[in-house]
Image 1: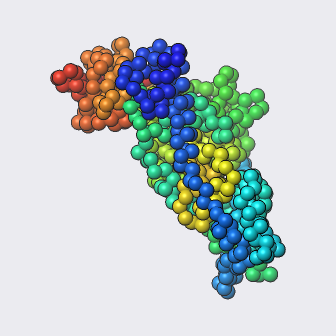
Image 2: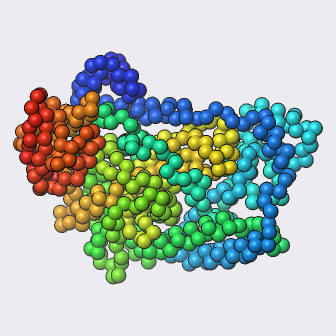
Image 3: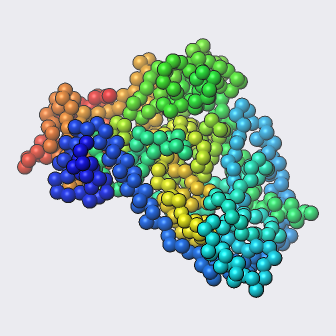
Length: 229
Length: 332
């Protein structure tokens, strides 16, 4: 393809088409078998760039971090008597599940690696912080290039701390907790995930290296998609 | 002591344990139907038994090109298998095991309808079963390799690192509902430091702060994936299980696209049923049978639902006149 043809594809993929581009597109697609793939990749790129716009502005703030640190040692939950009963019931259920899975035939269940159910709601606190040094600590957190990540905890006694860690949450591996794999949708209704439910899902021929499956993207512009039928 | 134990096993754990119990129960039902496909001693994917005479269904990514493969069923029972059919439209492959039948071996039935949104489902992968949830049961899909329209099921899993291509999807009753073929590429861009922390914290507190369409559900990113809807899956299974092991999809032999809100025919294949009926390049399709089609997706959907062999009245606008064409639907 020459530069003009690539320009036409680019304008169409990015929604900036000019009069006559649509006519040129038909010719380009007919003359260049690879043009459709190019167009798909450009749309994919366009979608990725659109995703950048949806990333919200930083919502962490000096006051927020300070508040989190100051409230880190407060109990976040009370535990009345019934919690003991719930705990015992949970223990029984977990035992049943564990024994059930242990007897499962042929292919063992490898439950996904799972983060704890009680992630700390904000990057909070370090042990032994005092009001005097909180400001300095917060300043340090806010200025670091590393990503502070709160460790998910189960116990109210667990000490949250600021740690320099990769962006993924800390997870437990090969512990009884792996049986308790929560559905992601417990955190947010599934229908909220994709507001463009009327869009067309375009399945490309290129595999996604993470999943091995073909990459797909959503398009609300059916005018640039050719169908056969 | 007891209190400490109670802290560890909360009510939430109980709920998720119940969820896992259901998963294990479903897996017990379907495990005898699922086979590991391997080639030269290396596992390449999964297949599912879909007929009593040893026909298995797999995604093309699970079956390497070339010579035959081995399939291993629970027992363990190991067979050699040959590829007896490939459907280029859907990317599904039919395998025929030699040395069948296996006495008492159950085979999967395609569900009569797509799973309802939010219903739980199970995906069999090489790494074992994993739980997911149906998000949409009728997503309009366009397959880039063939430009064909297909209805898709949208499902979501919390894992992102698993190789899920070719995963076999079952509902909780053990019925086959799909073979996973694609995942949404709209992933979050790498967020600068602090942004992702803030977003994650807010989400975990139950407030709404979507970063992207496909991630940020829970503590871990979410994979949105697609499988063929049950109508087309049933068609493929019927085709592979037939004596000829071939799959045919309805077609009239045209290409078309939206052009300012008009369904413009961009190409009519020479010799196709549309060509024979008199359709021409540049025609604008107005209706298929009694169904008015107002977009290319509606037209594609209407053509998809035609039956091979039926004669459909397709109305086109040509210049200033309307022409009704009687088109016999063929299969390809």
